[in-house]
Image 1 (spheres, protein in one colour):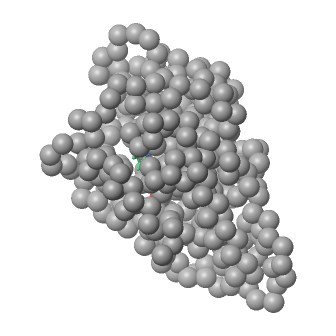
Image 2 (cartoon, rainbow, N blue to C red; image 1 turned 90 degrees about the vertical axis):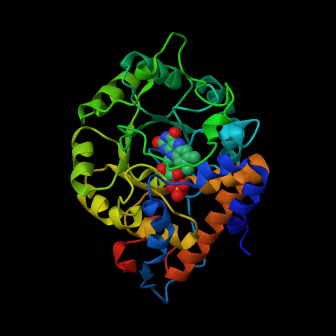
Image 3 (cartoon, helix red, strand yellow; image 1 turned 90 degrees about the horizontal axis):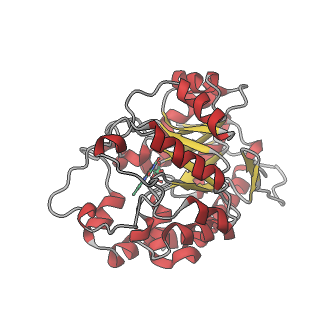
Length: 343
Ligand SMILES: Cc1cc2nc3c(=O)[nH]c(=O)nc-3n(C[C@H](O)[C@H](O)[C@H](O)COP(=O)(O)O)c2cc1C
């Protein structure tokens, strides 16, 4: 059995039931989370033959940062529930694979501590109702060396999870998340997500931070274009791992429309959601993604074998991508074009 396919069950053995459920679950009826992987597996390839594929080069750049392979780690909260070093262990694992890490607004590690790892990281930002808190967190992330701001836009409110019995929130200890909340007396209202965002926020964040802004949670070409017009350096085609509007289309389906809308703009396109195999990454790259992000598999790998697990996950996926790229008759991600794919 493929090691990656053993990870979730092995993680479930180690985690409290409510934690495992929180990491795996989607919102509401679980339609989007249930469809994500199958949507990638539904693509069919039209491989080239009689091409020299003796030398493969998976390396690329993401917003100018060189990476060994176009496989990055998506931001997720509560990593200290699965590993005592939490996001620092995740960062070390990512660094050893020469990749890039997305760091959640709700991380259990300070942005200064990320900076000290030297691993390239992008701040995932939730703009909160209280813009002062938001700006102070953003400033701290800039100080901690974040190389980009990943603005999550699919969360004007948090998607409803349908739980019976104890939830992860009954288990979370202080210090396991919200390590970057600035000092002060904050109400629940202050900490709610902003539900009044418009494309203007992109320019505001870029100006304030001096960093490229990548908009996460885009599923339509017209919205992707609005982001690019407002100055976004990139978009991530994402339905938040099926955790926001349930029934949102699979990212495998949304990607071609977004890539087409952004063709020629210079805005980089990324995708996440249900990516579990080299063949899925091959399809994503062919359909216009510059790189993919993995979410839950990185959490399972961190649970099972800490930073070494995360490195192995990334390098195993890269090995699979190398293999499938070769079988498709290509030698670099950049050589892939949409005509490789049919549905
Ligand atoms: C447990 C968990 C926590 C997450 N936390 C965040 C978060 O804090 N901010 C965010 O933008 N996305 C968050 N996400 C979404 C991921 O960044 C990503 O979009 C998604 O997990 C990708 O799908 P995959 O898990 O199928 O790979 C979270 C996902 C999971 C599973």
